Length: 261
Ligand code: ADP
Ligand code: MG
Image (tube, rainbow, N blue to C red; front, side, top):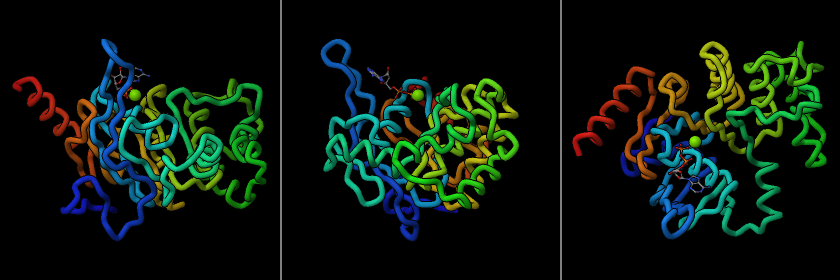
């Protein structure tokens, strides 16, 4: 469990290493009439072995923050580091390699290749990198997400929840420095969603994985160790040891404040 450092509200406990961080990150989309400030001076550190949820209403910049922190999108100003690597110092080829080798991704739309089996999908990032899977680790990840009996199935033969479990295993198999998940339960019913969230949490508890999840669902946020709240591109609050009830209360407080202001 990680508690907030009182000196720096959006840094994890100083005894915990930092898996990734943004420092003064701003992101502007478009220009002129279509100019949108999606992120405004966001400084945020994600702890090692910590499960962080990023919450906030639709359009507040959650996906943009994730894309910038994961090197999928460039920042307009500020800097991003993954482990000890400053992303701004990397050329395109190095950035691609960093995303492939150091970061795991889980998206709302599972993004599996339909012609490959579950096992082939899970090991695809390693194959692309020319690495061989660590068999023991692969077995552990596969059994953790309960897919041992489904490895020969293609995505079309799996339920949505099973497909997202394949995507979670794919994200974990390269032992990345950090896993980013953007609304991973957005396409799942609540039972399948809870299963996937439980596996993400297990990956933190049992494998020491660092996980960052974007969500607008208080129930999903309740699986995390820590929730940070984003509003209009700015960090506005955080909560340690969240429960769905406390997260919901906090969100209602934001809503009423923005209505009266
Ligand atoms: P969230 O994930 O919280 O719903 P986003 O990060 O997707 O929010 O979007 C934040 C803001 O930036 C929104 O106003 C959105 O319309 C805008 N935006 C996001 N991506 C782009 C883009 N590629 N081009 C222009 N505007 C964008
Ligand atoms: Mg989004």
